[in-house]
Amino acid sequence: MLLLHNAAIHTLDPEHPQVNALVVEPHGGRILAAGDAETLALDFPRARKYDLGGRVVIPGLTDSHLHLQHYALGLLKLDLFGLSKAECVAKVAERARQTPPGGWILGHGWNQTGWPGGFPAAADLEAAAPDHPVYLTASSLHAGWCNSAALHRAGIGAATPDPSNGQFGRGPDGAPDGMLYESAMEAVSRAIPRPSEDDNVRAIAAAQPVLHGMGLAGVHDFDRIPAFEALQTLHGRGELSLRVVKNLPVESLEAIIASGLRSGFGDDRLRIGGIKIFADGALGPRTAAMLQPYNGEPDNTGMLFTDREALYEYGRQAADGRLGLTVHAIGDRANHETLVAFALLREYEKERGLPPRRHRLEHAQIVHRDDFALFKELDIIASVQPIHATSDMPMADKYWGARSEHSYAWRTLLEHGARLAFGSDAPVDTPNPFHGIHAAVTRRRSDGSPGPDGWYPAQRLTREEALYGYTQGAAYAAGMENRLGRLAPGFLADLLVLDVDPFACPPEAIQEIKPQAVMVGGRWAWESW
Image (tube, rainbow, N blue to C red):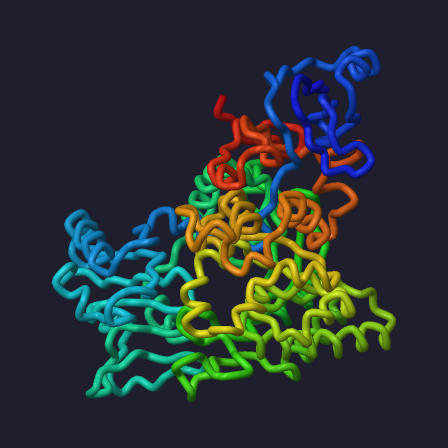
């Protein structure tokens, strides 16, 4: 066993919020004791002492909404975050010079907000990669940008109809212009050679130290079955260093139920979460389902992919199979429809004598003021991403206007008794949890914009509240609140060692915090000292 000492330890345990030592059992992976170093040295004389040099310790952090396979494979793609259209094109041209003719060029992270002319087109890419198909996903993952070679590979032409819940951008002549919205993205992505299971295993394995280095001990994954297969392979090999809650896609619901998988099945390293459903699109491409039209677009209220009746039917099937629901809802209409469906589902659970599941509403980016109270009334977890507020604020101001007062409304959710779990939706945004904590506490971007008070400052959180979302809130969403999210006897020994105290540093410095080491289950998963 280890006696970790000479540290300022924030336990997030209300009975003993600060101690200077922990006793950890690496084989059992749990904390045996927390308290004063001298006392613990006497109580555990055989413990090997590990001096942390006066550093700060906090519980391990969990990203409650992340696409692990997409993020891992994305580390191999062009990084287009924060670039102008011209810079994106220049990166494509550079990659084209390094790629054999005919090979795909993939990228992720562009955002057209602020680009002259708005959305790009295939014509912007033609000269940069005349001999390569190019496919670049937007930061929202709800829009794609490709060149004519990619359209040709996918068999998309002027006669190709728009798919259900999607749309091809088109020029004046009706020919596809290279923009793909929502489900239309699948037409091109299907033409890209699929990564093998070995590819996925290698990518996720390589991504783990990257995520640990940002401060993550665990994630809740929202990718599909191939990611689950890769995670099982890594776990079977003893190479899964992250703690993973795996949410599964609704298109596989019947097979999942038939196989007997249930929410909570697995172990403390890899366990089943809920069934993921999309209720609507996203803010960036203006496909989030709204109660009122987007500003400046009187005929556009977004896209509602799954209404309350369909959500309830999926929820009923899932409940009978002992599975929870986790629903993507961004627009206020989508959030309303989802909450109404959850109300029906709670009644169904009660009527059938089924245990109430830990149902989750993912994103909740804009909620009508009359719907906030439903989160507590129905005991629905609000799984939200603080960094989306600072990323999206120009778009929210432009397309939602005054309605933005009720967007990314974490303080309002807390005041109405909602349970919060925090994540990033990576690769939509960086999975660095300290960037998320900074956004939650300051409502400002890394450059300090939009000003000292932040964007809608009434929605700012305290540091304790923000850390709760990445620790105990995430643990509750996973059904693990009795053993994860705080540093206390009997809890899993997941912790971060820091050289900066997130409770004491200036607010703007939170985003610069970098872990010195990460422990998962009593063993060092990552170290940089």
